[in-house]
Length: 293
Image (tube, rainbow, N blue to C red; front, side, top):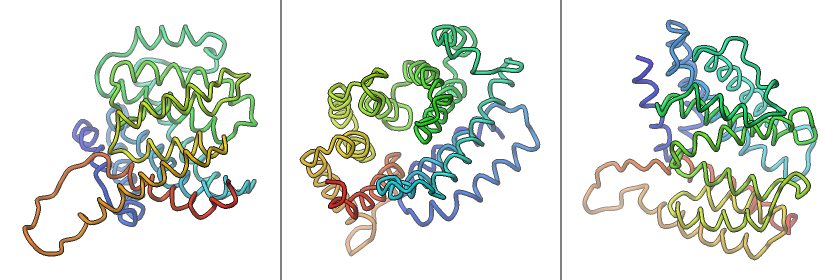
């Protein structure tokens, strides 16, 4: 059962209706948790729940938080919810490491030696999809929690470990989550302060390369806006990417309803959910563009 749930978990990426996605995610998570309760040592269930809670935090909480963030509201319920859901995902990550043989595992002991953590991953995890995704979503969750509390230097100290996990898993499978590896690398370079190794010019180049590599994933373009154009006040880049995204959205909106002629078979597109998130976030940025630029 665990392997079937794990293998079908990416079906959510094909959802192209925001209201349906948002209204069903909680019940889907509870269903998996109920199944997991019958087999608490099953790594497939554990990784699926990691993906579910981190996905909910990223897709829903962080999307709604974007408006509060851009308006510099210090007390946002969406930020609080995102941190709570990411923390639940991280607890499942701790359980994932435990069932993979690490008793009393603690990231803290590797803060000053990320190369030792890299060695640990190489020696104890395989090319199995469960291992790769378990490490990947742990890194994604850890990086997201850090990004939401950048003024917490205790949390920021863990960022090199998140980078190690991204690098390890993306080396195994560079196509994880339809471009997530490329988005992370570009954002990692673009959004960190120069004093901490950030390189906005490199980030800009990586975003532009990622757009060419993933032309049908609008979340890549949106991330270019969110993590480079907005903080760097690059209005021209914003408007070019906005134009391309709106063009893509118009063209694809026409295919969402039948208006006569041959009835087409359902299409399976794993970019759908990422495009929904991108469209929702672009609407928020568009509503505030006069304040931003």
